[in-house]
Image 1 (cartoon, rainbow over the protein chains, first blue to last red):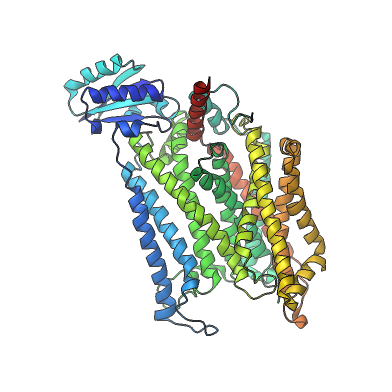
Image 2: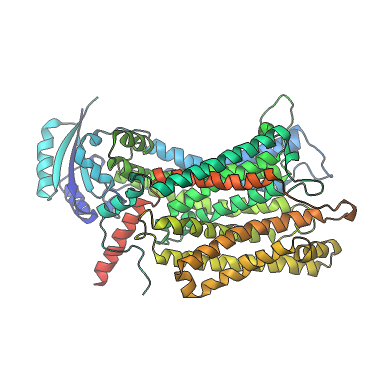
Length: 177
Length: 449
C-alpha cells in the first residue's frame, strides 16, 4: 500500500520553494516529485536528478546500428554473393556510407524512444493520482508537489507541512493493488 | 521593437484552452466540404494506383529514354516538402530559437504526411511493387541480396529512417499535449482515446528530465538526417552519368531546394487555417515574417545552385552537357524553365521588402508559386536530361498520361485529407512549449520593468 500526498501550487517558483523546504524538513529525494505542465527549471537540481541514461542508450545503439548496417552490406555484396558490375570492387566502402549512416540514426532514435518508454514505465494509462479530480490541472496550468509514503500514519504530518507551505489544496491518494 | 511572439494577456490556463479549442470545436461547413473533396481525390489516387498495379507502369507516360518522369518528380517534390518541417522543429531546437514553438507541430505533421506521399512513388515506379521487399536484405530462398552499390536501396533506407525518426520525434513532442487534451476532455470517448495515446503522461519532474534529454537528442539526430536524406535523393541523379545530372553541386543544391519548398508549403498551409482555428495569438505576423526571410535565404541558395549548374556545364566544355542545359533553357520545355526562374529566383526577392512580408495575400501567393515552381524544377531536371541524352537517334518526346496526372493530383488530395484529420484531432500548436515560452517571456518582461 502506498500513499501519495499532493499539494497544488500556483507557479513553478512556489513549487521550488516548497520543494526546498521539504528537503530541509528531511524528506528523502526519492519520495518527492513535482508535476507540472512544462518542465520547471531548477527542479532537477533540487531533486538531485542524475543526467539521463538516454544519452548512453543513444550512443550504444547508434554505434551498433552503424556496425550492423556496414556489416550487412559488406557481407551481402562482398562475401556471400560478390557480383561484378562494371568491374567495380565488391567491397565498395564509399557506396556503403549512406546506409551505414542511416542505420546509425535509425537505431539510435529507436533506442531513445524505447529507452524513454522504459524509464517512464509507459504505457501506463492509469496512475493513482488520476483518481484525484483536481489533479487534471497538472497538465494544463497547475504545479503539484507529491510526497510518496508507505505509512498511513505519517500522511497527516505531510498534509500539515504542505498547508504550512501555502499549498492551494492538499490531498491524500491511496494506491490500491 | 519586433512584434510579439504571443499576442495579448495570456495565462497557462487560457493558452491551454485556446490551443485545445480547434479539437474541441465541432467541424464547420468548410471543414466538411474540404473533407469530402479530398476524400474524393483520395479515391482518384487509389484508382490510379490500381490501374498502375494491374496494367503496369505502361499506363504512365514513361518511355525509352524517359524512363523516369512523374513518378520520380513527384517523389522528390514530396520528400522535399518534408524537410522544412524537420528544419523548423529540430534544427531550431538546437539553436534555441524560441519562435519555433508555435509552428513546429504544424511543420512536423506536414513532414510526416509529405513523406508518406513521397514513399509511394518509388514503390509504384518499381514496376512490380508487390515484391518491394526484395529491396530488404533478408535470407530468401533465391539467395539474392540487394545491390547496395545502387542508389535504390539507399533510398529505401533513407525514406524509412526519415519517416520513423520524424514520427518518433513528433509523437514524443505530442505526449504532454495529448495529456492536456485528456485532462480537458469533455466526453468519455475523448478521455479514453487521448488517455490511451498519452500513454499515462503525468508531467512528473523525473519524466520531464528524461523527456528533455531524449527530445534534444532526437533533434540532434534529425538534423544531420534531414541533410543526408535529400543528399541521398540527389545521389539518385548525381551518381548517374546522364548529362545534366552528373554534378557535384547536387547534394547541397537539392537540400536547399527541399527546405525552400518546405518553407513555402508551411506558409501555404498555415495562412489559411490560422484565422479559422483561432491561432492568431500564437502564430503571429512575426512568425510569418521570419518564415518569409528564411524563404528568401534558401531561395537565394537555390538560385546559386541554378547558376552553378549552368556555369559548370559551360566550364566543362563537354558537348553533351552543354547541349543538355541549352535544351533546358530553350527546348520544348523552355516555358517551364522560365516559370521556374520567375517563381524560384525572382519572386522570393519580394521578401526583401517588409510591406511584402506583412501583406498576407502576397506571402500566400508567392509561396504557392514556389510550391509549383519547385515541382517544375524537378521536371526540368529530370525530363529534358533524359529526353535528350547522348544518342540523338533515341531522343523522344515525353507527355504524361491521365494516370500520371491523377497520381499527382490524388496524392495532393490524400495529403490534404490527412492534414484535415490532423487539424481535427491533434492540437496543432505544441501547448506545453508555448506555455513554457509564455512563462519565459513574461518573466523576462517582469525583469525588464
